[in-house]
Image (tube, rainbow, N blue to C red; front, side, top):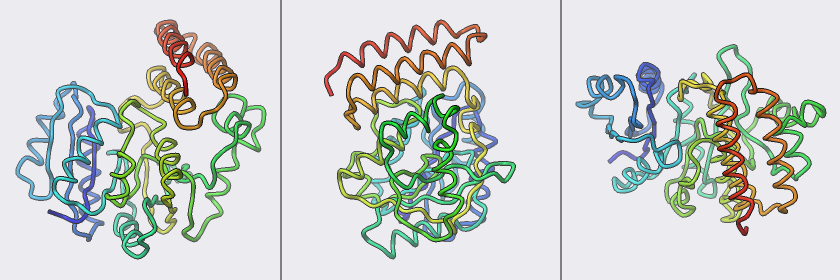
Length: 307
């Protein structure tokens, strides 16, 4: 089979998936094959994707009856690509649109340096704004609070540090973290760290990969010449809402306990901050209290577990 497995998940957004693949085909010259999962869509997506790709030589379409989420959905496709002996994988959301030969450039980096395991591109939003594609170093506990929680609204200078760093980068370099919206991976290295953690449904996969890669002494690289446009939230057709935020917070507690091993007191602090955020920003949402109770129940169970 093809050397590069391009991994794409569709959930209720087949129009974006088609646009994503059309642009990919126009801008990619490496030997690739697309593995496409319809992730239990509730609309006509599977029917339309079959119409477009069932007979396409460069696409393998797989259907799931349930929504497996980001991690399990991608793992399903990656396992198929391993069976087909793909050497590299490109994980990309269906709301990613290549602006140049970004996949070619990322794969070239992996081919030229056998010590690089993962590569991520330069990413912009629909208004041309730079989106966070890479983080240059692992945050300590204070930095994490400032950059990932509402504490950052008080300490805005600290919160903006990662984005400012990325804006200044014009050459490829090693980083701690890459965005899960799109990145390329050396398949054998990705497989060594067991791909994505299947516990997470949505979010924090990037932090988990960063930690697992650090433990395995794998290198992650930012490639600024590879450029993509990201229609953020388009892959879920949800954007940032109460459901996605709740899943984010659940994955966060799991990440802090299992991968960062931060003290229980710190985990409780973040847990309380997230409850406050839920109330401050979402209290007018009719499902706020249901989501709040779901998160509290999960958090109490998670905080009782040993690292």
